[in-house]
Image 1: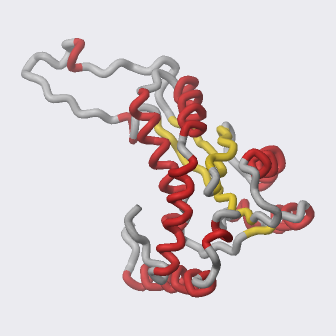
Image 2 (image 1 turned 120 degrees about the horizontal axis):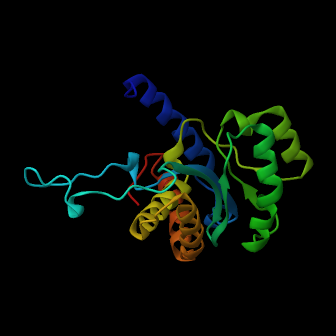
Length: 220
């Protein structure tokens, strides 16, 4: 369902408010943020669909068929962290995530990612307003651990620079053509670790351009 003009207006007003609040923030502040999000990566691309041109009665010729995937196709769900300094941990989420599981993921991976990225003192954690992230239990857990959390506007996935990092990852993984889900996960982990720190840095820098542009998304 397409967004109505009224909804689009309200969404932009939210982004505009966020932009005004952070317009004067120095670039160094954004470099001290750990960004996070989840994504779904399909095996064999979106919905595992490929188109093949072929002549009449040649549909079963080997060159016109696509190999089936052992143990089925499917997808995997990943949760990841990154900052302007590079990629942090990438975790496969094998079950439906709830608040308790989310806090477990944070407990096991957020601080190790901050240490690996050598974040400066006072670093800030970003996550969106998914109900799992905003429950009282999660807020209390973050407060107890003394994690600073960036106040994030609702309904603004394109503002999170990690969305563009997911696209980068998916392109790299698709080029590898993993043969099964196990290989898909392994390749995701390998390619995530190989993403250059310069790519991460440029994505974070671009956020400052979006803010300077009063919340309008610009091309990366």
